[in-house]
Length: 500
Figure 1 (cartoon, one colour):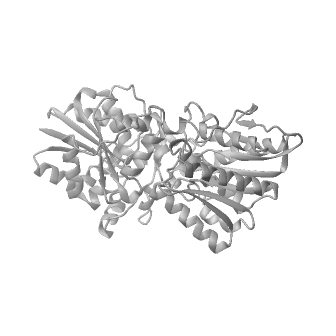
Figure 2: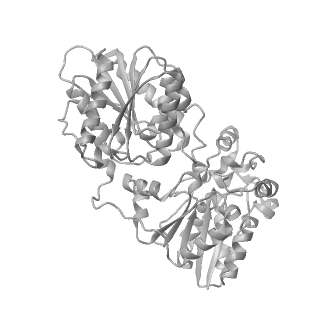
Figure 3: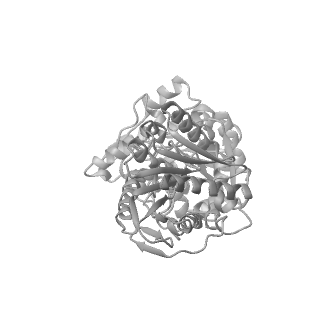
């Protein structure tokens, strides 16, 4: 017999699984909906020391008292953190870990980093003793901040609000500690597509290369999609129960990694750009042209979030180096910058890093500080907002390549300031060069189309460079003539604005 241990997202308890548990039991399974300390009808047990380790120990004790030989442990949202902690301590008792609309926390991560509600981050930032306090649940009309509420009836939303309990803050701020003992356990991912996550998006993450994503192509990992929001146990209990049974049986879609073992972002740049003299100062590299006197400069800004321990760092990635060398070869200074966008809550810090880098570049005597272009890629696209809303007179052009131009679904924690779709109204006559790939992820493409519509309304000066059959990150994955032409067209356009 298979036993399911079900662990829900924050503010809730075992009650949220009622309908799913009933259907699983009808199939013959043993089911244990968990209510963790301080949650649900155990809210009165919360104390100053209640933290993530408390919740991990709750699950360890529960698993230890399950008689069934196979335990499938399901973590929903926040619940994946204590689930992984318990599996790490009892790997021999766990047959499968199921991530239900949940992230991929690593050793040392806090649950707070994956909380999409910005009000939670703001509250804990103000709290003098965040480990000893609690975070109130969302108001009745605020549950969308925890994830998509698609598919929930008014009665279900009312039930969430009525039965929700404050979340002990220590469960969000204490780092998850993993030894790796559970790393080889079979895993399933259940993607709730109304929140923006899909198999296609996960496949793109696998192709992008970071180890935590490439591991998803392991044959022990299976994926399922549910066309609903973040609370499928309330919006689609029958479908969720069926998916959990299939996951326990080892079903699900398998991903495959590319034959090239190098991550996509570390493969060669699509153009042969000769090496240029390069100087490194702090987080900034300058690729220098063969020219006398101050020259215009292009500052290339990478996307993200990028893990803090990623090596090489983005300024050494082939795409940024390739663009900077290309620009230097055409007579301008190509600058690359490592900014600290390591999590969705880091956009303000990354914006400061970029602003500091721009000032460093402008102050260099080999740079004409009155002729600067900024070029943003991928998730760095949100950083265009500051420059579009109030462009300084020395900024001659903003370029964006396969950019994210509005927070994606589930990115609610990104500060409201970073909304290029809204900021473009302030761009005035600033030229904008936007490179758009035909095979863009649907979620990102939607932000680009919204930006272009807003640009038309505000009469912004936007040139679109299309890449036929191009993918996100095309410079290292699409070595086609069309892709090369697009890079050349975009670079020539940006340099034309710098020299005008």
